[in-house]
Image (cartoon, rainbow, N blue to C red; front, side, top):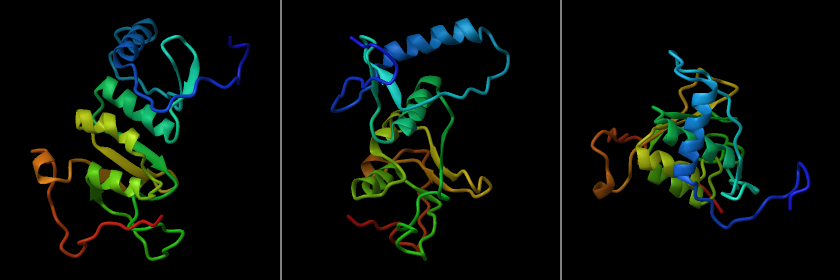
Length: 182
């Protein structure tokens, strides 16, 4: 049994939210604390930490804070999710290794997941899944330069997966969007 704060929770190989339970708990909390608020409130919600159905604490693992944001975005039917990072979006390469690297204006979820698979550190695939499922755009912006437009992540890469509302604009000057190394 848990005896106090800070004790290590249950480790799990993969984290799959309990969507129905989470939705019910959020609706109950919303009703108890906000009722029928006329304006949408500005909420600050912590991330990364979660619990099992039995109430045991655990974490959402790597990029758990981003995953928390996309879980809430899906449940709250958000119009977009903004990840505030220490870089101005997803870069063409690791700017610490390649000084000439620059942020990409837009990319598909598939492109972002492929970058992550091959070592890109800005976005984690699990954090993108709820946004893919609900077609919620992800914006990657710089907390130190909020005026910078950052990178918009939306849509699918393969022709048979493409969404009718995604922008298929191709930049002929940039046939390769990004590179990574392992």
